Image (cartoon, rainbow, N blue to C red; front, side):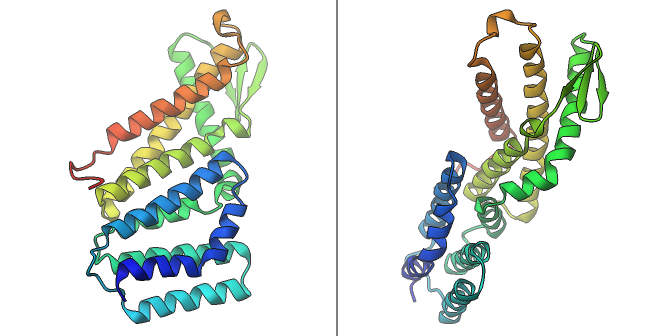
Length: 257
């Protein structure tokens, strides 16, 4: 069957999995994820030559796996199998014109993985961010110590709580790196390098954001003692993160073509 016909049919056959995924889109981030995933598969469809064929056994196995997951498995398994089936079929139908590693990474990031990342990475990222923030503040002449994941300033412990860990900033950086790698046609090793750069930028960016918030929350800049200042610093940090990631991951001129 023609790939440009088979891929929409496979997507339609997994409508229940997409409905489950959208049902978990309870906030703006999850809704953005669903949109990004749809855009990635649309991009794969666009990169599929008009005359390309998707072998019947590939389509049959993808449909069978999706049906079994939907009949016997929990919702997360059903969503995961549907996404994996679409990635596999898109790769085969495109004749390798769609890079497998970035498409797989993007699909994995689009799954409901943030709770798992919060569980696994919150404490290590809090520790690293606190250490880097202390270093930045000391370089700027602020004398303070470090106690676990808290800043010790004049005997007062300023705790790095879970929202300050930077898990979501890291996730956003990996998502952006995956989108750029997909558009640029990156192979596995180049994609891994892009993810490594994005991780380093995200950790450094979160430390810079935390150091900026230290000045704000402790009255160093009275002019910024406004209700909107905290959110504004977060938005600026995300903008700088995106700009740094775009600058670090260079795309070929024909990207997005």
